[in-house]
Length: 609
Image 1 (tube, rainbow, N blue to C red):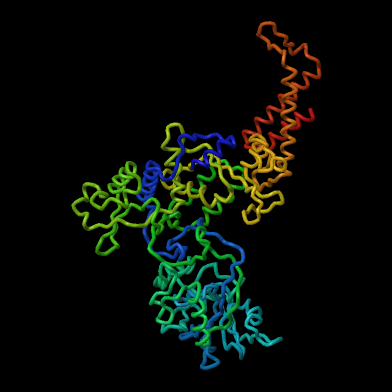
Image 2: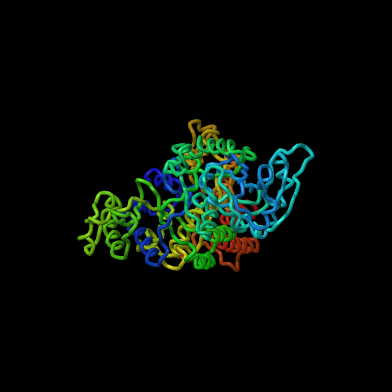
C-alpha cells in the first residue's frame, strides 16, 4: 500500500494518502457485517444446497467474477446412447429387442458428470426423430440434427440414417431409460429453451448436482441433488467402487469414458475446444458442484437494481448496456467461501445437527460491535460464549461458529458503506466510481447489488470506465514478452538516459489526458516522444507569453499599463474571443470527462491560433 501510495503521488494523482481505506480495517469490516445484516433482515440472504462454481485447487466456491476463460482449453466430449426401459406411447412400436432396442442419444463435454445423471431433458417444441443404422442401432435424436450426426458418428461414406418416425419433444416426455453404469432408471422430462438444435443431439444429459440449468430442471421435477464429488475434485463412494478417489478432471474422466465403452453405450468421443472456467488465482480448471452455501437472492431486488441503473450517468454510455446485461442475467449470488482468511459470515450452527442456524438482529449487532473494536480476527480467536450476545450466553455450548468467509466481491462491493457512508468528508451516494471496463461484472455490479439490497439506491451518481494500456503495437503488456512500459521509467528515465530520457510526470499526465480512454490505449517510446513534442509546444507558448508580460502591470495596480478592451486592436479582440471559446469548450469537455477533447482544443489554440 505504501509503495502504491508513493507511486500515485509521483504521478500527480490527488488523494487522501495520509488516510487511505483498506478492506481489512476494523471499521470497514464492521460496515460490511452491517451490509450483510441489512440484506439478511430484508430476506435476501439464505442458505441452500445448489450447484456452484467450485475450485478443487482452492477447495472453495467461486463467484463468476473470480473465473477466467483462457484460450486453448480442450475437453473430451462424448455421445452416449441410453437404452430405453419404458417408452412413451409414441415410441413403443419402435422399441424392440437386440439391435432394434431403442436408445436415447445425448452429448456432453463433461463425461465425469455421467455418474450423477438423473434425467434426460428435451425441448417440448422441438421435433425429434427415431433414426436407424446398423452401426449405431436405433436412436432418438433431434430431427434437424440427423444428417450432421450421421457424419459425426462416422457412418460409411454416402450413407445416412434411416428416419423411421418424427415426434415433438412433448410426445416423448415420460419415457424411462436405464443408466448404462448403474442399476438406476430415470425419466425423460421437459427442459427449457436452453435446449436447442445448434449442437449435440437435442437431448440434454441432466445432472442436477453439476449444472445450473440441470438444477432448475431437476428442482421442477423433484429430482435429488446427487453430486458424488468431494472438495478436492475426487469421486466419492456415491460414484461407485470403480471411480472412488479418482480426480474427475483427470483419470476419473477417462475411467468414465472407458466404462461407457465397455457397456457398448459410447457412440463417439472427440476433443472439443471451447471456453471453460478456470480459478483466477490458481489458474486451474473448475467444476460445477452442489454444496451447502450462503446466497444473496438477486431475484428479490433485481427490478430495483435495474431501476437504479437508470439513475446513474454512465461514461461512456455503452456501460449502461453492459451493467444491465449482467444484472438481468445474474442468478443467486453465492457469497460464501471456504477460505482461511476474510470477513466471516457471522452465523452459528447447532453443534449436534449442524443444520439449525442462529442468525438474528441481536447476534448481528453484537458481532458488528466486536468487529468494529477488534477486527475480524476476533471471530477466529474468541469462543462462542464471547461472540454470542447476552441473551444467548447461557446456551453457548449448543452453538458452533461457522467457518465460511464472504466473497471478496462482497468485501469490495461494501466500500460505499465502509468508506463513502462512514467518512464525514465524503458523501453517499459517491459522485464517481472509476475503474476498468471489466468491473461491470465485478466491483460496479457488486456495489450496485449490495447498495440497492440494503438501501434501495445506487451507491454512485456517475460511473466512468476506461480501457487497458497496451504496448506501442497494440499487444497486451507482459513481463515474458519484455514489452512492459513502467510509468516511473517514463518519469525518471531508464538506466541509459540517452535511449530512455526522463520526461517527468507532466508528460505522462499529458499523455493520459490526450488519449481516448473509453477503449484500450497504446503507449511506447514513439508515442511518449510525440507527447513530449506537444508538451514542449504548450510549454514554449506559455513561456513566450509570460516573457512578453514581464513588465506588464494589470489594471488597478500602481503605474498600470493595461489597455482597455475598446482600445485594443481588432486582432487582439478576436484573440480574446477565441480564448473565451476555447475556455468554454475546455470547461464543457472536462465536465463531460472528455479530457482528450479538452487537450486537443488547447493544443490547437496554442499551436495554430
